[in-house]
Image 1: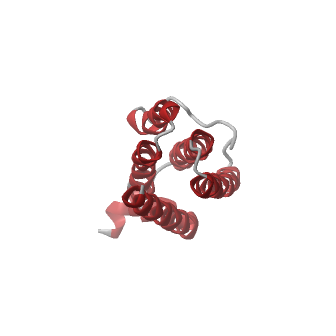
Image 2: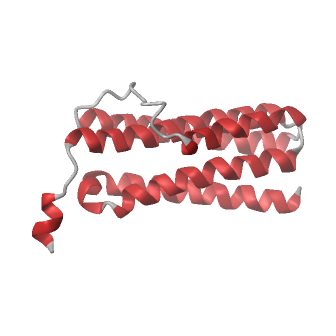
Length: 157
C-alpha cells in the first residue's frame, strides 16, 4: 500500500496550487469579514467580525510563507481555480447591503464552510501536505471556532 501511495504523490506545482487555492479562500474570508463588519451597525458584532478578519490576515501571511518555501509565488492566487468555493465568499458580500445582522452572519457561514471543506481536503491528503499539516490543522481549527461563534451569534440575533 505504501509503495502505491508514494507513486501517486503530487508534484511540487500541485502542492503549491493547493496552498494557493486555500490562500484565495482565506483572502476572501478576510474581505468577507471586513465587509460584514462595515455592514453592521452593532458595535459588538462589528468588533467581532473585524477580529476574525484580522485572524485571516495572519492565516494568509502564514500560507504565503509556506507557498514561498515550496518555491511558489505567494502573490499568484489562482483566483479562477476554485469556481464555486471562491464564489461562496463573493456571494456573501451581496447580502451585506441590508444591514441585517442575522442575514450577514448567515452569509458568513457559507464562506466559512467552503474554507473548512478546502482545509479538510488538504488535511486528508497527508502525504502531500505533511510538512505544513500543523499549520493547516491550526488554521482549520481557528476557522471552525470562528464558525461556531458566528452560529452562536445567529441564535442570539
